[in-house]
Length: 111
Length: 117
Image 1 (cartoon, each protein chain N blue to C red):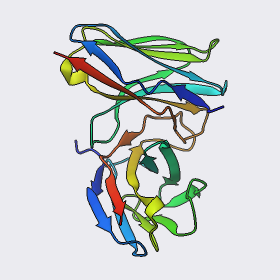
Image 2 (spheres, one colour; image 1 turned 30 degrees about the vertical axis):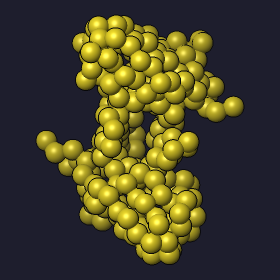
Image 3 (cartoon, chains in turn blue, brown; image 1 turned 60 degrees about the horizontal axis):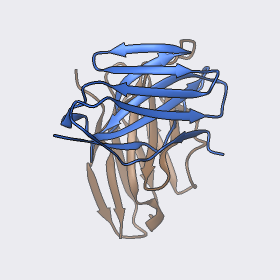
């Protein structure tokens, strides 16, 4: 079993839709949860960074962490064509520094 | 301010040649990381630097891979006697992580796309 599982998609939605992206994980020691966005031929760009359980909102983006279910989500409201990219979840535990990534979900928002 | 800078952006070389990949982290970031991204494998950790020392080299795939960091800034990843399976995107990240402080987020460069013929 992989430490972090993420559905690779692809996911295609119309402009304006609400997008839900998810990851599950097996290591209960994970404490820090991140979402990165990666455009084609670019490096991952940090979108959201959360510690422990709960919700965090930033503009159109909401990150949700449920440690009891070992499940994290990223919601994108009013999706735009410019949101079309690969979304990667990543996690860290304690004083560790090695990011453990999901494989990424390819999202296309159609105008 | 400037982000993480990597060079070259693309590198094509013949099997058996040596290659050097460079990373210039965000100014003031003490921690530097190398990752490799390949199809089917996702993003994999290679090595971590705190200052000029590398306390964790556990992700380096073989002894053909080495890395150094000088002046607490620029890092070079060297691959000797390249093989076709080394073809991947090599990504560098940096953070302001200190030894006794909680994790700070890692910021990535755009990577070097390495192709071995």
